[in-house]
Length: 329
Image (cartoon, rainbow, N blue to C red; front, side, top):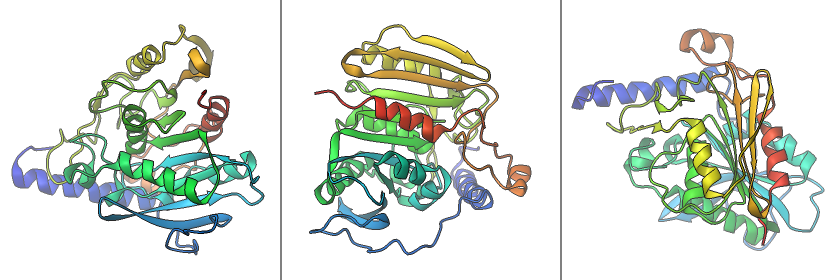
């Protein structure tokens, strides 16, 4: 992508347009359903099923969906915040990754927040309008958790964040800058920006070895534009293995145990206070959520989208990890 002024602007706009078309063609367009009240209830618990809510953060109205399974026990429940990728939405994430069914079976809440301009700010140079405009998405997610907990009993030792791509980057940013989350689950993402003093946090990271958008071996991916233009996207993270080794040091973990069940290689490290750091590498997999429905054939053919791996179900794998790693103390 050219770094010239007009060329960069046109190129960035074209990139965003292409990505939005790709999302729609892949069957990830927003669903239009009756999600119940538009405003967050102030005196009653959230309704069962999926409901839509808003809250004000830094003078901006932010929106999210909340899945509350029917028959959820009256005792405080775990909460998973599922963060969509670039050009996604909360509705798209709900429809694409299978968290509703997992929540119904597992008895926990799921929140699906919306990024401004379908993106999340994870550094000064990434990503999109939120980074350009200085949006504080960490603050939004922390206030979202607090708003949910005020209306519905939440087990604050079992609050988790999961995300794909740009959403996975925000999950890492939450682990760096917040103290709310017992664990994060990351798919096809990396850490960008500074993270000098992260709080020890359990991490599970799932990544395909042939991901070209966020390369497994680190460095800029095919969507990187060095943070230039109206849609900045500087995505230049470390090799995934190095990133997880860094997190093992943060958590003071034991050396990892490696198991191989072709095409999946799992490196699991046990850490103090019940924490763990797990890397799941899928040989030959690209930039998708494993176990999710694949893109429609026309999108895959014309836009070169990756088919999700069928080697594992990322949602079930991440929830199993979350359920085993609450925050201690």
